[in-house]
Structures are given as C-alpha cells and as structure tokens.
Image 1: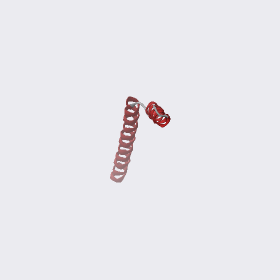
Image 2: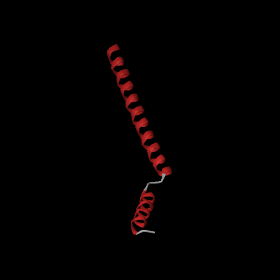
Image 3: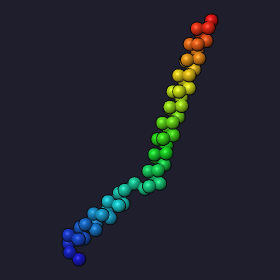
Image 4: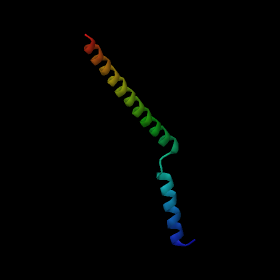
Length: 60
C-alpha cells in the first residue's frame, strides 16, 4: 500500500472511534427534552396559579 493510503485509513479509523456512541447521544437528547418539558410544565402551572390568585383577590 502507498503511504498516503495508509494515512487516510488511519485518519478515518480515528475519526470513527472519536464519534460519540449513538446510544449515549440518544440518552442525552432524551434527557434534554424531558428537562424542557418539565420546565415548560412548571412555568405553565405557575402562571395558572397566579391567574387564579388574581381572580380570587378580584372577587373579594
């Protein structure tokens, strides 16, 4: 084999080994999505509680 061909084979092998595992990537994305949905749910519930509080104060 030529020397340049060996260089490219070694480069591709190193690049493939450095790539993150797909399972790890899927877990990271899933964790970020769960955090996003939880924070959105918390913000929504807080907004509803404040609106109910204002309506209750307006009635009194």
